[in-house]
Image (cartoon, rainbow, N blue to C red; front, side, top):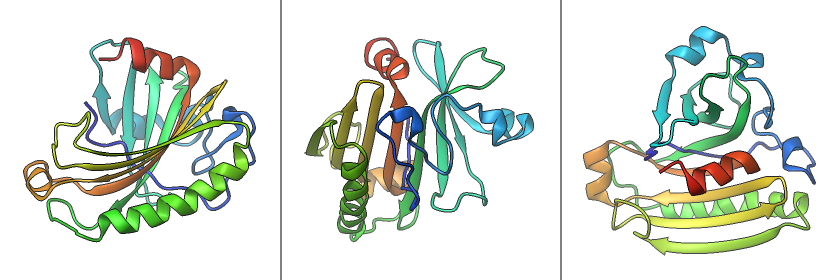
Length: 195
């Protein structure tokens, strides 16, 4: 389970009818992570594994990010080229482990701002918006505001997570906004084999 899958958006989003042309911090699907980070940084970054070992996820924090606190990359195990099958960027709200009552509103406002850009980029995509409390998460008090864009070549996800006070304190986490782009191959694997 990923406790970290954060996000925010880049002000200069690339025009992209095809998800492969969409960028987060100048990084697209099918790019090599080695074009952006050296192997030492990649190997020392926090990795997340799944029940099925075909893919793994890697968190990278860097001061060179202009709009994000961190990025997460979805990579194929054993791939020495580190080809990117998914990327997420994120922004944090409040402090870790401390309840921040303004998170839900701040995240929703930022999410709506990003949504306008995504709507103009993915005109023909099927779009779905959902608000859930506790559903599909180990925190029964988490408030999730999710927007999905479904394309032939993959998916774009926009999530706001506002966690309960108890859960934040126990897990030392932040409320966060996540913008994610996933290749169709990774999306299918995640929905059918990852867990």
